[in-house]
Amino acid sequence: MVAQTVQVIGAGLAGCEAAYALARAGFSVRLREMKPVKYSPAHHSPGFAELVCSNSLKAKRLGSAAGLLKAEMEALSSLTVACAKQCAVPAGGALAVDREEFSRLVTEAIRACPNITVETGEVTELPEGPAVVATGPLTSDALAASLSSLCGEGLRFYDAAAPIVTAESLERDKVFFAARYGRGDDDYINCPFTKEEYEVFYDALIHAQRAELHEADRDLTVYEGCMPVEVMAARGVDTLRYGPLRPVGLTDPRTGRRPWAVVQLRAENREGTLYNLVGFQTNLKFGEQKRVFSLIPGLGKAEFARYGVMHRNTFLYSPALLTPQFALREHPELCFAGQLTGVEGYMESAASGILAGRGLARRLKGLPPLTLPPTTMLGALSSYVSNGGIRRADFQPMGANMGILPPLPQRVKGKAERYGQIAGRAMADLAGYLAGVTPEWEKGSGLHE
Image 1 (cartoon, helix red, strand yellow):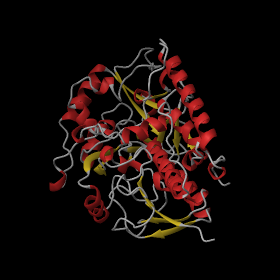
Image 2 (tube, helix red, strand yellow):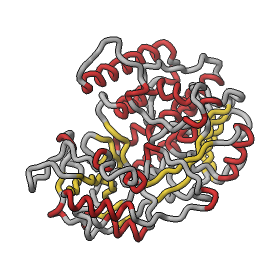
Image 3 (cartoon, one colour):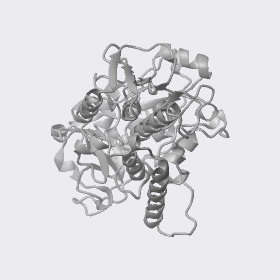
Image 4 (cartoon, one colour):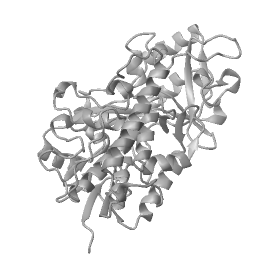
């Protein structure tokens, strides 16, 4: 018997997870990716699952939103989490990866699947028949036009990437290694400001020249979770000190005191030769980035391996369009995954690909839909994107956070204890749910079975 063919459009994290889930279910998958024939403004590598912004997949500990999300994904046989663990780089309590090695591992795993056929070239029309569309927030204009004709006008926001500097160019006598609150090893390079140094830097930042936007893109909405540092700074002199430059949990060993503000640098690769400026997504002109960011202590002679960039992102008004299984309500065999749906973050995008792939597989096999408990992070995220009560003007991308989960029935004072109990409840509820609905083809650890 010939296996039914399902198309997956896009080989980012979400598309790879969807293709992997469908292949595991026994379907013949056509994975269609426009690279290397054509690249989006933010992509440069021909590999799958390319990380274009940070190389961090956020916290590892189960008692955190990001850690809980990854644990739930592992329970659902995630390909990307398994690959990430194989190429992790030191990052304190976070799971950060060597981005090139991560892409290579995911690409090799996908190409090794006998049920998956990879086709390169731009897709300009939405496919007919069962499919998962995971073309990301930089969906090409032609496909976006096809999408608009089916779904109506999409929303647009802007995303920004942080600069990367070489480790050898840092002034080591002005920085120190430490992780906030001593969590994990001393994996972050910390650049401590005095009050006077910070005020000089802040003044230069808010008066720096920004890169010109295209005419059609000037009326922009910036997503709060990826705010350019100069936009955040314009909200007030202390905004950065209570945000990405907060000094809490850190002590400068040279003074024995907490700095006035701190810029943290995180490793970009295993070798530790490249570091990115955490929280420094930006749309400043390249020359201005060099001038202003060189005012950060320790970066006076920094060599910039990559300057920050800002680019357009598009996502659906999902509450009016998608089910909790990421399927189009009007056409349930057409599913969407990734940031195109309004989830925000690498792992959130990958997780939506798992749910879209599994959901479509179950539908095509005549099984009940996969509706995860609302106490799980995945269940809460899928509920968020499909909540029809959210007004169009208010809908913003959502990442994993404890605030979208229902509270515990009992009051727990300490945040760490409370989050730990919430995470424990989520994993228990997920295990119980999957035990009753998971067929044999959905079971297993996931990687290279």
